[in-house]
Amino acid sequence: MYRSTTEYAPSLTRETAQIALALGHEDIEQSIREKVSLVLLDFLGCCMEASRSEAGRKMLAYKRIALAEPGLKQGDYAFHQSSGAETEALVSGMLGHALIREDMHVPSGTHPGVVILPAMLALARREKLSGKALVRGIAAGYHVMGALGIAVRSGLTNRHFRPLGISGPFGATAGALAATGADEETAVNALAFAANFISGLNQWPWSGGQEIYVQAGMAARNALVALDLGRAGLRASPDILEGKDGLFMAIGSDSEASTIFRAKLSAPNCLMEVTHKPVAGCNYVQTAAAAALQLRKSLGVSGTGNIRRIVVSTFSAARAYPGCDNIGPFDYLEQRKMSFQFAICTALRYGRLDGESYSAPLDSELLRLIGATEIRIDEKFELREFPAQPARVELVMSMGEDLVYELHDVPWLNPKDVRLRFETEVAPSLSSLDLNRLVVLVSTLWDQPDTSELFALLQRAMATTDL
Image 1 (cartoon, one colour):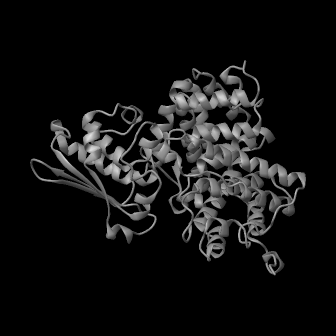
Image 2 (cartoon, rainbow, N blue to C red; image 1 turned 45 degrees about the vertical axis):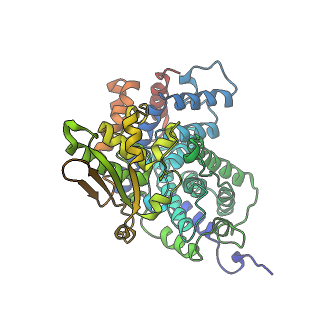
Image 3 (cartoon, rainbow, N blue to C red; image 1 turned 120 degrees about the vertical axis):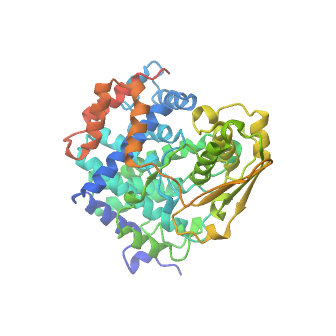
């Protein structure tokens, strides 16, 4: 006969609730405050840039439909208090993910920023949170999402489900609890509901589907739903993570997943492990793409014409991830941004990886390079020091010496470069005065008594986008 694990010890959900609620009252060290500001700037820049894209315009059009107010101008429904918080979280999550260049937590294989930040911003607007509450919520959300993601990823985890969609609702709900507070039973129930809200399948890289963006938004929205269900007094399974038919069993995590989760919860904040991609595209493709960009400099004016074969060496997890080892078709941008072959050959063909090169026509030379590319597993890389992601690109030339470039890890952006990218992406939407004020507000978020000015600036920025 099955007996609940809560009969013998506090459940993992209860332990998480206690930690999240405690984080809501603790001071936050300066390094974490600065990291919160950095990830928020990066996310907002992505939202602004994405809102100008075809996909972003459709996301914002969805928001008008969801609010049943088709006559509104864009500035009236983006980052605005008239918007429903759940819809706000959903659309902001989609926009933040729409460039596929969001922040990265390599140990959990997730992109926490596109779940935690839209959920916390929507909550802050709805409940008029202070800057301190928002910072605490973001820090708690990143930490719990990362910890659960690492535990879930242990063992032979079912790779058909998107990691972001598994740990995202739980992490964002923990952040919401840290920001707003609750009694312990409410917090346990909210988190348990969130664990039921996992979603997101990994067919999209093969088909070019845009559910990749929706998955982030759904996770953010579902966190607010879980919070409100807990507040309403509905009851959920406290052993939803470790139970006989709970999350770890359903996903196929290792038998030590509970131990891993507890250990990571008590470790330093996962937020400090978050990195920033140098280019848009899948995390696993980043290192090889960077190597290809370096090799392009050695090709000179002759370009790619003398390349006979391209050999890309990586590790098995990278090659096996859905959509990464893909020679086409490349009918959609989402397929292109996931493929090793497309990213590397585009980098070699054009010497850059940006919106223009990713969207360029599939000319005969690019198709030739893709057909000449081989993805190999290097046993040395299998023994890499995790979470490093090494790669090597070798160009076998028809004339002259072969060219090789190897990198130990992704050349992640440093804080200065993240801020410069943010300013570039937001500059078309705000005056220099407003842009500087937005940077100040985000950089000093901990000291802001409320977030009303922040949302006023974001609404103004979104209103300039041509829908």
